[in-house]
Amino acid sequence: MIYLDNSATTFPKPLCVSEEIAKCINNYCGNPGRSSHRLSIKSAEKIYETRALLAQMFNGETENVVFTYNTTYALNTAIKSLMVPNSHVLISDIEHNSVLRPIVKLSNEKFCTYDIFATNGTDEEILFSIKSKLKPNTTMLACTHVSNVGSRRLPITKIGKLCKENNIIFILDAAQSAGLYDINVKKMNISALCFPAHKSLYGPQGAAAIIYNTDKIRSTMVEGGTGINSLDENMPDFLPEMLEAGTLSTPCISGWCASLKWLKSLDLSKIRAHEEDLYLTSVKCLSENNNIILYKMNSYPGNALLFNLKNKSPSFVSNYLNNNGICVRSGFHCSPLAHKTLGTLNSGAVRISFSIFNTRNEIYEFSKLINELSSKK
Amino acid sequence: MCIASMKSMTYAIKAQKALSSNYINSEIIKLDSNMTKKGCSYGVKFDCINLQVAERALKSYGVRYSQIITV
Image (cartoon, rainbow over all chains, first blue to last red; front, top):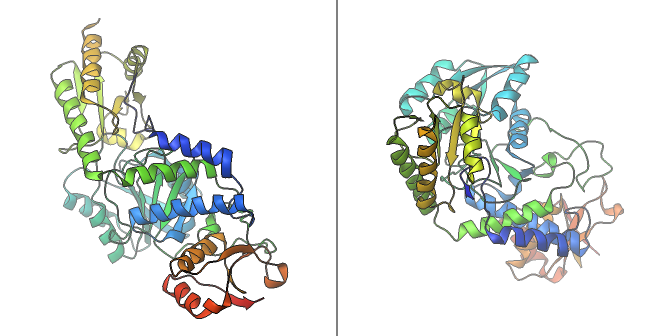
């Protein structure tokens, strides 16, 4: 089996992840932050260790790392906890539904208005597009770092600077970039960084995080037990417990802790170079076939590539590949805005995406199959 | 013994790490209800002989505590 759907979730995971999850469930999985017995404390310590590793990786404060269940929950929480009523929000034209849908809902409920800025062009052109959409009541900009459709990468350092200059909350969706590109919440003026465990951080599904770098939190998303202040009818007013109602998934977070320690022992730039090499190898192989349409969003390489075969639907291609042992993803990738921007909103497309565990030989084998399919009537 | 009362388990672990890095042994405990206004809270228990060093350690680590109780 060749797995090329790593933008959806990386597979396989390093072995240490499943080992730690099993160890957690079998040896120490008490309810974290609910008691002072040894299992509860051990679970809480593991969660704290994971918070600290994430804070270190993205230059945040340990207690400002809030765990959620996936990036969609993280983005919803960040957006809704920081939203100023009757304000104006900016999002980009390559957003995932996890940013688009909450903003559209809030807009439909007359809680905010929003505009979409363009991401094609140079960094300066992107900044110009943002500036041209700013209004006196713009209080938030939420955008992706790297698109899950074709790897377009936004100039987040410059966007962060612009947000700071205009006193705008900057929420960054790092679903595709965390673990692959350097992100520094303080230097980049990111107010809330949202990312999952299960993509380029190689953790399990079921855990994600927000790193807050602002004290402008206005409300909670979910209310309930936090293990503290139980006699108070209101949620605590401090992070992380303020936004972590209910029991956290200690097994998932413990597995994530293991993957973070594994990643720490590796060189991020080498992982990036490896995946970019696979991207360029794919581009080279697929470019040789005139029946293949490549959708390159950028002049630079990334870790996901979109294509279509002439006269064959994306789902037909992905089914064919699946029947021959290759996992890819076809369709719209939960990102209608990005497909609209790319001009593939009618058909969708096939996406291949890479991880540290893929090899060039796998790309050659995939290309061979695609060439065989394209020659079939 | 001294008990520094913390806002939450997260802060209690942070406090314990701050004390540990200053060679002070401590234990995380659930506080008695008579020590808390809102119920369910945690504290870090350590030998009062280390009180001054502990206060400095907690301050330098940015760990805020509501009070230190002697028991």
